[in-house]
Length: 224
Ligand code: HEM
Ligand code: HEM
Image 1 (cartoon, helix red, strand yellow):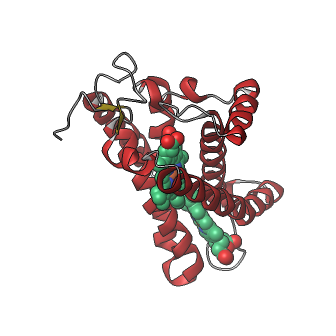
Image 2 (cartoon, helix red, strand yellow; image 1 turned 90 degrees about the horizontal axis):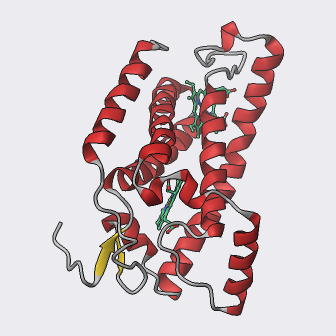
């Protein structure tokens, strides 16, 4: 991609951006296939395995990826969160390079809930036609708890996703911070990102290696 490095700087690496838009498409497809019902239940389960792989990639990337993809860079800290909310209400919150303290909290909540949704799917049992691949190996009470999680976590996810989309549209359109554009191109304005804060690259080969290891592990578990 050609860009003017004096006016824009790289913040979101390519693997992180791909992860984000794949997560958006896969979660939407998982929800749609869940709602259509029995005819497409097998597709729903395959999508679920894919999502577990996707989330596993994100966890590893959160440990070894470039600066703003790392969990350490946006780990929720109550003090920063309170300061950020206070400054936002006063209209003076500084635009963040990576996730802001409120956004970081939302990201952790979303990732944890989606992981709970996907993992509980492995043990869910509708007692009629379809059960997750590990349901028969789990005790009845454990499968019951997992079914409760699988049928309820999705409601919290939908609320958070609605809040997430409303927030990014607000900051992008009304506050003109270009967050959505940044999640597409990876670039933010040089007014916000100093030369020292820019990431040096996307670590593509590291990402490809992680994808191969995660995909091999997923297939070797031979769930289906
Ligand atoms: C994040 C990914 C997932 C989402 C958003 C999701 C969502 C849902 C929802 C909303 C339902 C309830 C459908 C209804 O009756 O209204 C459902 C049912 C089901 N899901 Fe998932 N699911 C996901 C991952 C998985 C995985 C990984 C598996 C297993 C491999 C799985 C297996 C099942 C099964 C067997 C049912 C039917 C059980 C029942 O209705 O009690 N799901 N899913
Ligand atoms: C199923 C729907 C969605 C889910 C589950 C989701 C989830 C996430 C997650 C987990 C992140 C953090 C990325 C990371 O560090 O891993 C994120 C960031 C972001 N998402 Fe989404 N997203 C969804 C839909 C959307 C849509 C439709 C848009 C655009 C309209 C969008 C725009 C953004 C932006 C701009 C960021 C970066 C926020 C920031 O600057 O801190 N997302 N999203």
